[in-house]
Amino acid sequence: MAGNGKPDGASDQQSIGDLVALAAKDVSSLIRYEIALAKRELKIDGTRLGTAAGLVVGGLMIAFPGIMLLCFAYAYFLYWAGAPGGLAGAFGFAGLTFLVLTAIAVVIARYFIRKMTGMAMTRKTVTDDISMLRRGEEGPDGQDAAVPNPRITAGGAGATAEIPARG
Image 1 (cartoon, rainbow, N blue to C red):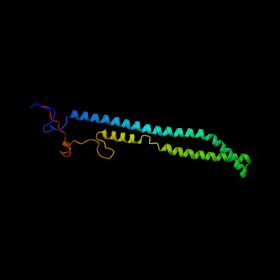
Image 2 (image 1 turned 135 degrees about the vertical axis):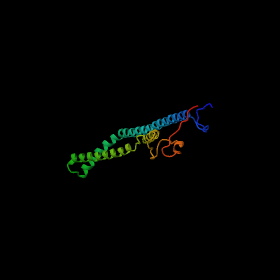
Image 3 (image 1 turned 120 degrees about the horizontal axis):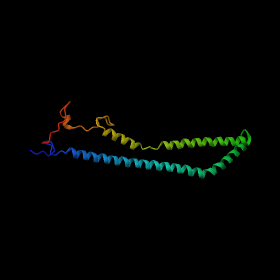
């Protein structure tokens, strides 16, 4: 009897070569999808960062002359209202006020920078994929990442896989 490379009674099962080719194709697709996800996340974060930087620079360029005028007006208002220290004290209070406003702006900017994802989805999926591909290790859900062979598990504990010889 000539062997066809398949075990007896397994005419509807795929050969090991077919399974390896299918696994290689799946891994290749997985890698392409991970790269596409990383590119998309980088593009989104880059757009957010560029928009924020542009708005900050543009806002500073537009607001700087107005801020200077407001500083002078505020200082003269404090002087008119009788701030201690005369005109110098009024300008000092005005300067401190604008330093506090600058600190508040920095805190708000940090809030927006922290909202950046840093490719969190890509890191999570790559970590999950690597743990799934490692044989004998647990996957992210705590289960064994390796795909069990039904012929082995059906035999109970200590069962071994049998590979029939080609005849």
